[in-house]
Image 1 (cartoon, rainbow, N blue to C red):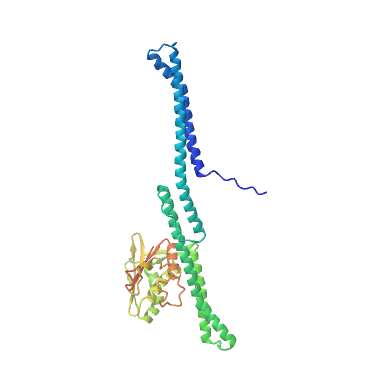
Image 2: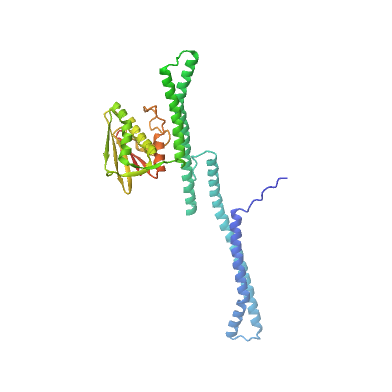
Length: 367
C-alpha cells in the first residue's frame, strides 16, 4: 500500500500558531503576576488607606479585585486572539495570492514560456526584490533560449551549403555527369575543410566558454605578435585594395605572457572581420599601446560600422545583424565569439564599439 506523504501545515496555520503562542505566554505571565503579586500589593494599599486587617470589607474588596483582573485578562485574551486571527487571515490571503502568482509564473517558465513575468506586488521590499530577481532570471532565460534557437538555425544554415555541394558532387559522380578531376577535387576538399573548420571552431568556443581551453603561455613582444599576424593577411588586404597600418606606442621591447597561437588567432579573426566589412579604398589601423597597468590592441576600420542595437550581439555565435548582407562564405560565423572567449581565458576583455552604421568600427583587446 502506497503511503501518501503527510502535508505540512500551511503558512496561515504557522503564523496563527506563532501568534497564539505569544498571546498565551503573555496571558499566563500577566495572570501569574496578577494572582501572585497583585493581591499582596492591593492588600497593603488597603491597610495603608485605613482599613482594619479584620474588616470583612477587606476580603470582599480583594475578591472583587481578583475577579475583575481575571475577567479583564480573559476578555483581553479573547479580543487579542480575534485580532490575531483577523490580521493573520488578511495577511496570509494576500501572501497566498502573491505566492500563487509566483508559483504559476515559475510553472509557466518551467514549461518553456520564457516571456512570463511576475507582476509587481505591493507587499514589502522582500517581495519586490524577489519579483525583480525572478523577472531578471526569466529575461536571461528568454535571451538564452532566443540565442539557442538562432544558433541552431544558423548552424543548420552554415552546414547546408557544404552538405549540398558534397551531395551534388556525389550524385554527379555516381551518375557519371561529373568527372573526378582537379577542379572537382578542389571543390570537395574546400567543402570538407569548411565542415572540419566549423566543427573545430564550435569545439574551441565551447571549451573556451567552459574554461577548458588549454593555454601555452610564453612571453612575446606585443608588436612582433601583431606584425606577424598582419603579414599573414597583407596579401588579402592588397588584393581588395584596403590599407593596413600599425601604430605602436607600447614602448620598445614590451613583452606579454600569452598563448602566441591563440592570440594570433584572435588578431587574425579581427583583421579578417575588418577586411570583410571594409570596402575597397578603405583603411584598417592597428594600434598597440598601454592601458593602465596592462596592454591594449585596437583594430579600427572605416567600413560598414555597427548599428547601436547590434553592438551587444556581435559576439554571439552565428549572429548576423543583416541576414541579407554578403558574407565571406569561408568563415564559420563564430570568429568573434571564439576571439572573445580566448581573450577572456587570458583574463582580458574584448570590446566592440562603433559610432553607427556606415561609420566604421573598433575592436579593443585589453590584457
